[in-house]
Amino acid sequence: MDNDLPGMQLVRSQGGLVRTLEITLDALCVILLILMTGITTIDVVGRYLFHSPLHGAYESNELLLGILVFAALPRVTWHQQHLTVTVLDACLGASFRRIQQKCLSLISAVGLAILSYFLWQHGMQLADYGDMSNALQVPIAPFAFAIAIFTAISSLAAFMHLFVSPRPQS
Image 1 (tube, helix red, strand yellow):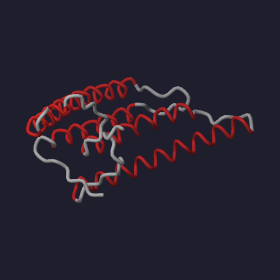
Image 2 (image 1 turned 90 degrees about the vertical axis):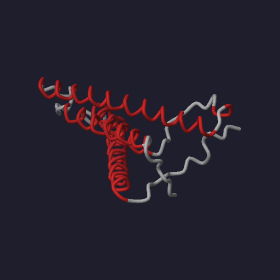
Image 3 (image 1 turned 135 degrees about the vertical axis):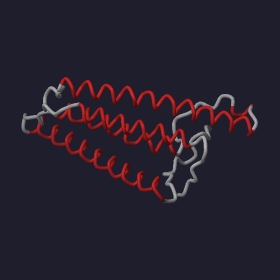
Image 4 (image 1 turned 135 degrees about the horizontal axis):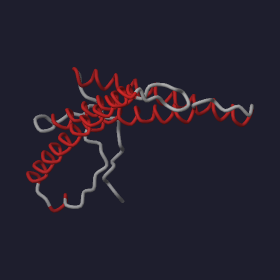
């Protein structure tokens, strides 16, 4: 039996700015999921009952899914709920595991910051070129900017693990 995923309970911060950000991101994720479900339902019903699929359904779900994944990333990063492989944990002492966690947090923070920078640069290129989606003709740059911002927030969350540990509250 694998005990790496005990219950997978929803973890919440106690209050303040982090909790407000969590509530905002949770609400955004719920709205995006509802939108994607509604779009897919309308598309399937229209396609199979009325032989008229929803124009741009696939494309809109692609864009919304990108936002959804990166909107959830700050919460996952803050609560350290990423999927992990614990090959060496049984062999390591508690102090070495703390050092390992700090090193991993630093590597994650730097990696996410670099990714955020390049995503922002890509968004700037998309905006300069005026890139639009194929079917719906909506600008793609705002999606890239949103993803870059969510990645930057995730980088900040990982960086904060060097100084504080989140205190889960069920």
